[in-house]
Amino acid sequence: MNNGDIIRLDYTLWTVEQDKEEIYDTTIEQVAKDNGIHDPNRRYAPEVIILGKKMVLEALENEIMKSDVGKEYDVLLEPSQAYGARNPSLLKIHSYKDFEKNKITPEVGKFVTINGMTGKVLSISPGRILVDYNNPLAGKKLHYKFVVREIVEGIENKTLALIESSYGRDMNEFKVKDFEDHIEIILAESCKYRNEWITAKYFLVGTLRDYTNKELRFIEIYEPKKEEKKEEQKQENAEKENVEKIENKN
Image (cartoon, rainbow, N blue to C red; front, side):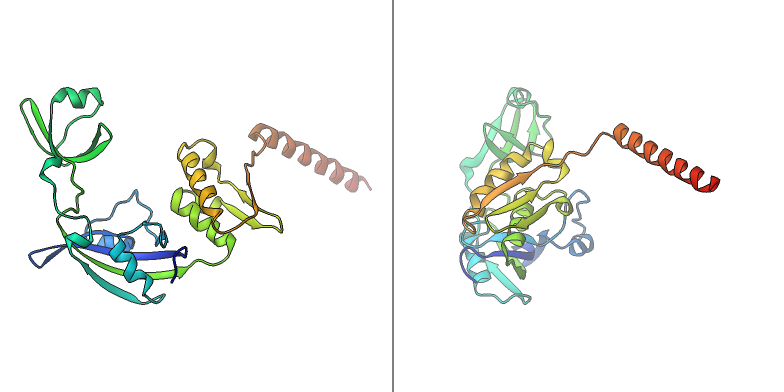
């Protein structure tokens, strides 16, 4: 595999402490169910990765680059190869006013974002709340089991994969057509009212330019109002009835 390749990657991740492994994340729904970490709101599917874009840990990416499609691999990463050691200075004490100002209800175990930093609430006591801004995987040894399911080929498939990576909603509604001088992208209905699409489109345009010199055209389709459709249907039915009456008379 090479830098710039777009792949679909299935993986399961465990944390390792004192030779004891605990499952942390997976892209495979049945594995999540079997291990009690299933999230009904999550879309389980192989993750779209662009090699060379630092979308995964460097040590993991190095192993992916050497792998074969369809073959399962195990990788063990030391903290220095993953998210580094824990930093005590990232343990911060906040007042209740900090949470009120950000309209956050403090709860132990809850992830919060304050002053642009995201951390986990460790404890709550009178007048103070302790938040850990270390990466949840900092200081931990990691065990990955991964399979490259596919190297995405063809500009139409690459476009859909990049939409999946950046937007990830209503994928069955997107349509991509590759013409001689341009690429036509018919948008899903949800793009009309979700702010996430604005960011996703910016990423998509910037990334697709690495794979094609063609013009990119985004198309939104607006269907007629239901009332108009009903009126058209009534008119069609009336015309059919008139035809049938004339045929019966004859």
